Amino acid sequence: MADEFLFLTELLGLKVYDLKGRRLGLVKDAAIVPLIDASRVDRFLVGGGWAWLSIRHDQIRSISLDGIYLKDEQLTPYHSDEYMLRLVRDLLDQQIIDGQGRKVVRVTDVTFTIRHQDESDVLSILDIDIGLRSMLRRLAQGVVPPKWIRRTQTVIPPHSIRWEHCSIIEADPQRRLRLNISNKILERMHPADLADIVEDLSPDDREAIFETMDSEVAAETLSEMEPDVQASILESLETEKAADIVEEMSPHEAADVLAELEEQTSEDILEEMEVEPKAEVEELLEYHEHSAGGLMNTEYVALPENTTVAGAMDALRAHEEILENLNTLFLVDSNDQLKASIPLARLFTVAGATPLRELAAEPLLHVDVEERQDRITELFDKYNLLTLPVIDAEGKLAGVITADEVISLLREK
Image 1: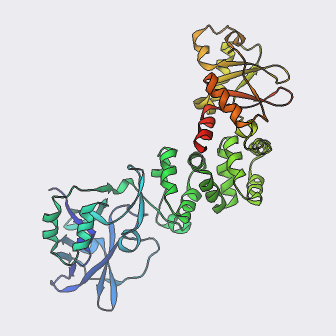
Image 2: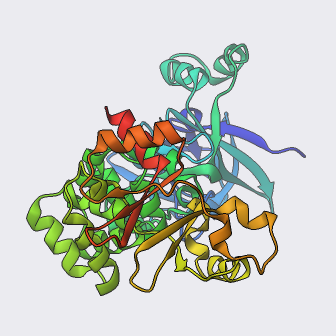
Image 3: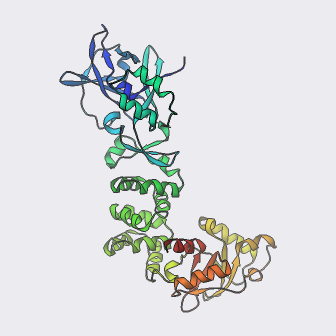
């Protein structure tokens, strides 16, 4: 037999009957216990006079629009349970995250399935409803018979989200643990999509998500946000967590976001960081934000002048973590002075014994760390550059500016 369904708007106010068919009260709320079962309704809260009663799921014989009939009358008074997620109090009209639609939505109703098993009916959450259908049910709740509402709503297309694709927003870290709320759905999203979602949330909700999110995912997401939002989030977090996130960012992105913070907050975060990433970020913070030094990043591959294509391929395998954004290699002498720029694509057209020097781009374009931004954008435009090396006062390679940075710069203007 196919599963039947029931809406939360229909469940509320449903009459509850004992073994002799006498009415005990009306359903006021229902709750799941996520640590036990993520979707099964575990308790029904029934208003019977001056007190609420708690009915366990295994005390129910049948559930339908005609009412709830019990098979066990040993009921107990309701006492608040911190491990319960109450559907009316904690879910209805609250914001949740739609993991597939990649947006924040407000819950207007809940759809349950009714499964018949072992002479009992079990109610489980199927969908979160957010469309016009659920709004119609809410408006007509208690005014129009549920069967009439069901017939009327058939002309309206359904709009719902599968329960397993929803992520509940909960600001209290302890309650998140008790309710078994995780960020797994969010952590599978593209950072740009997750950034859009988080920017739509309140400051407290943003903090709750970042405080419990994997630091690497948090860093990627933070990198996609506007500077003022980045600063707001980092300032709201515990210093240790903020430092963990900043360490996962590329050095130039970390320097950019720390530059947006209050000086004391920035110093506190740096103090918590590991020595190596801290040193890189502090070096970049020394440059003026509108100079080449302020735009450059230190994620590049520099090789000795006598390196061959085969040697370059070995070096690339050793720098797997930055390959996704790499398009150019650089040759330096024994004093780290820049000598050549090698487009990465050229490595795949020649033999492994070929000296990299033979593949060098001409002319060798570069800028000083103090070069101004407008000159940098001119060079990228004139020569259709993807990467521009930056040298210090001694001619040593200090960093690189990528086309992505220039595009972001132009967008800000």
